[in-house]
Every structure is written in C-alpha cells, then in structure tokens.
Image 1 (cartoon, rainbow, N blue to C red):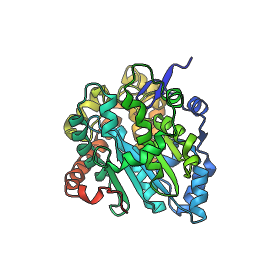
Image 2: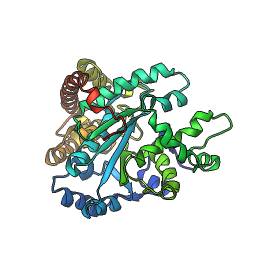
Image 3: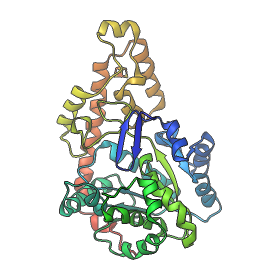
Image 4: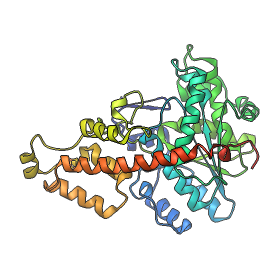
Length: 369
Ligand code: SF4
C-alpha cells in the first residue's frame, strides 16, 4: 500500500513521483525531450524544465514531432474556481505561458465553475461563478498573449454542452468509475462532468497539449480511450509536481489549510509573517549546531520554493545549497531572503491583477477564433 494518494480532488501524504509515473502509466520527461524542446524553440529553457518540475508526460514526443513537421499543436489548461488562488496554483500557468510564447500556439483556459459547484458541497453555484471571475484576473495577470489566449467559464460558454454530448456517448459508467472511483452516492452531474472537461481537447483538429499538475491526469486518461473513435487525437500532457505548502515538503499547497498557503491576494506584509512563522526549514535545533553540521536543504520548504520559482539563477541556487550545507547560511537569513522575493512577486502580481480588470473581455472565448 502506498503511503500517499493522488486523485483530481485529493492529494495526501508524501508523494513518490517515480512511483506515480508507474501507477498512472505515464512516461518520464527525459533529458532528450527537454533538449529537443530547447532546440525546436531556439530558446533558453525555463527553470520548470531545467529543474524537472515538469517530470512526466503523455505523447509530448509526438507534440514535438508535430511541431517540427509543421502540423502544429494547441495548449489547453484550466482552473477549478473554488476559492482564491495561491502561489501553488499560479506557477504552472507561468510554465504554460513559456510554452505559448516559445511555440507560438493558441491556448484555451477552461474555468470549471460547474465542476466546483458539483464537487464541493459547501459552495453555491453563485460562489463558484464569483470565484471564476476572481481567478480569471489572476490568470490574466500572468501576462498571456490576448490574441492567442481564450478563456471561458463553463457556465457561460454553453456551446461546450453541445461538444460534450458526443463525448458523453463514448464514456460508460464503468469507465468513469474505474478512473475516478465514483460510488452510488456520487451525484449524476459529477458522473457527466468528465465529458465537459474533455471537450476542449477537441477545439482544434490538431494535437492538444495539456500542461497541468499530475493529479489532473485521470481526466486525460479517459479522453485517450475514446478520442480517436471521434476522429481526434489522443491528448498529450506534461505533468508537473506539486508546489509544497509552507509546513510540509511532501504534499501539495492546500487551500483547505490556509496557514500552509500564500495567496496571490495576500497583503505582502501578512504573507511575509506567514512564511516567517510557518515555513518548514531543514535547520538544526540551534545556530551553533547548524554552523557545525550545516543545514539540510533537501528537507526544507524554503529551499524548495527557491528551486521551483523564486531563484531563477542556477548558479545562485547552488551557492545557496552549498552555503546551507556548510553551515555558513542560517535559516533566519535564508527565510528573510525568500520573504523579500515573495513580497516582490506579490506586489507585481497584484498590480497586474488590477490592470487585468480592464482586459477580461479581450480574453473571453466565444467559440470563434
Ligand atoms: Fe533551508 Fe535555508 Fe535553512 Fe538551509 S539555510 S535549511 S536552505 S532555510
């Protein structure tokens, strides 16, 4: 039995990513594929690839081949609007932006206000619609190209129903139950929902590439079972690891544990206090012991956050690693440096988020390109 669990709705325990590749039947994102990405885009790779934050894939090799031969591909990702977005939610959008910019392709972003209403007992439909608008501002603030980025909210983009119907005819209950673990108590809306989530993979007659955290993979596994029978490609995906919350290195930053998360709308001062108080370090019991033995960056959330997002310079990251290991760097100073980076990021993000209010209409997908 694994001591971790990963489903589209729940991540528990310390995730073993190598094991997950085997369990989910995906493939490791190899150095060869990463190098090929750099070669084709003629670009310097972002840290998400260099440091294997994206670590697994389905058919990414075929996506690269389609790009190389001129067939092209498109991107699709999404967000379930159940509350405010935190840093863990937004980081994969930065990776998506890099892919869009460097491959110069269309990107569709599905905001699943219907799904969150169906799956979260405590939320009303009005709540999820309100969060949809709120989350769209955060996504636009990432800086996507408005001419190639199409955002749609399921409850408003009703054409999606028409597209989901042929898909719904291809999925029987036992297929959906095998992938998602539905029970007799599952609502019928939940059982239909995978058809809605699969529909955007058919928006263009090209291969679709989904950059998303690995917990969303079950949806795409199901899509791959029937896509070809409807005359479309099996969707491709690249999977990211999770951004850990402040208090626990192994799992996923969770909105249900607010003390573990830094929200994009947090006041930067308050966010700093939260990091100072809660962020797990790999430090020793006393400063004296740390100077003698050195810290343990492998066990440290502060280091992980630098590695995933807040230290883009590889050389500086390694310097921090060695300074920690040698006992030269102490956790107080290291945390203060992370807090500064996070606060800078939040201030900038919040400024762009404000500007995004005027851009929402530009990004709205109507079904026409
Ligand atoms: Fe983590 Fe920094 Fe402390 Fe090392 S010095 S354990 S990297 S917080």
